[in-house]
Length: 221
Image (cartoon, rainbow, N blue to C red; front, side):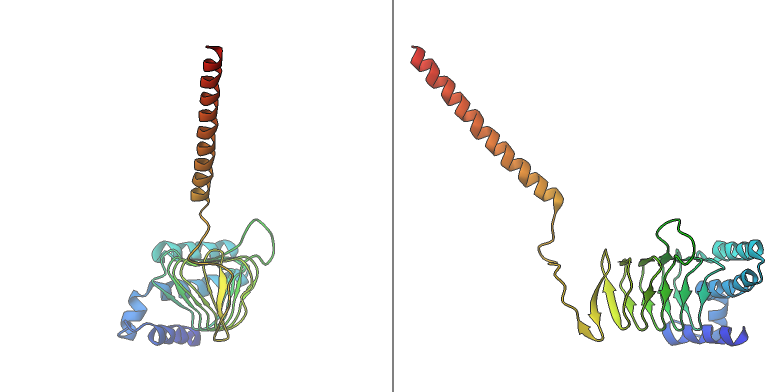
């Protein structure tokens, strides 16, 4: 437990240039407090003291704004930076030296039983607001971009961005995507254009009807 705590403190100094002293980190870093609270809750969970474990996790959530289910498995050196709004589900597994920023959700996609949350590999970075939803793995050394929504497995050494998340870099090489970022489809604009065409067509038909009516009137005269 003490060795894990030392690794957690070391992770802060390694990845946050704003960290000045051990005292400051221990006293003021809510991400660190949430991780330590989880270590206690997880031990209680494994001892089948589930209600007590949930109470500890909810107290930690109240004080830190970070919700980690006591059933989640967390490796060494996790760093949660500015962690307000982070949610980590019950069957989530997090490897070593992972970095998570605020607003990240490691969640499920429904009410299924069993393993329903993601497995995060070692040395992964998950940026602000990203959502990783479902039972699959994020490979080692991968990066998940801000606000990305990831719904399927990510190979090691990949960079994922967008909604729905897509791989743009893998093993240091840019991945070709068919998505045209300049000419993105706009369903609202397409609908308006279609309506304009129909209105123009109706106007033409109305003019033809008026012309026919005039011609019929002249014929009667």
